[in-house]
Length: 407
Image (cartoon, rainbow, N blue to C red; front, side, top):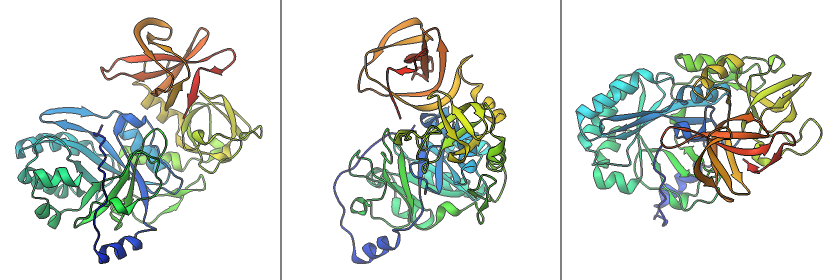
């Protein structure tokens, strides 16, 4: 997961630059996903988002940390008719380390040829020679090389001007942690050859990086769009991978085929549950496993609410979802979201057994990957920093009375 930083203070703009920025007002926006942090399906901030740049993993001066949900996030991005790209968290200093990193990750890329493969350089002691060498290797492999980072760090460690003469930049700067759905160009990190601007780390409540494509670079690797069987958009990648094939298969599956075990997203435009009650805003854009189907309605697992098939979008068929869920502990149903306790809750090593001595308190947040029922309670399940699975009760099973709130 990339480090989260903010930089305060507006930058001075030349008149010509201000004029150029005004022309970018209608440019495509999208997100970048820090691998496992967002869960097994791609998350977006708005229905109008057009792309996701997804972390395949990290390289830390000789050690690797792969992201197990990279492939399913690529597939579910394609399933939503959006363009998927790739980035690598890159902490390296030499050409030998660049080779080690790229020999490992390049064969694992699931986005199409010509798509972005960005190096996220924001830590360590990078060298200009090694960074240029790595970017050139990405280009030779048939992808669009991009350098990501924060302007102050990159200028302090690299000859950024020379790099920017040959390679596109993706730079980040934002004023605060307030939810922002559009760029504030008063904080634009003015420099040459910037193609993507990451303007917030809180594109939505709970945290999500928001980006704007200034010059159309996120269209690299994709042809013209078509229509999906679900009634939305279908992207046309320049080449195919297993993740792309899975995403297109989901996008081409008609909603009439939705069955128990599918993973679906609640559309941002959905307004009411099947019983007429208003759908809370925190549900919109979230993905859920389908627990049951009745006619044109589906029951969403975890929140146990019925919704019309017309108000959801297929992200994974049951077969695709099961292949991803195989990494979860036995009996745990895959579901991604955030749970906020409204009381002190114990953390367990399994559902209701093996107290860890750790607690979550009101106001804290749990990013969970699944849920399980055991006895009188339903538990959210998350993976700790140590890699162990942990369980926290989120509701009483008999009444579905929540012990906090979800987003």
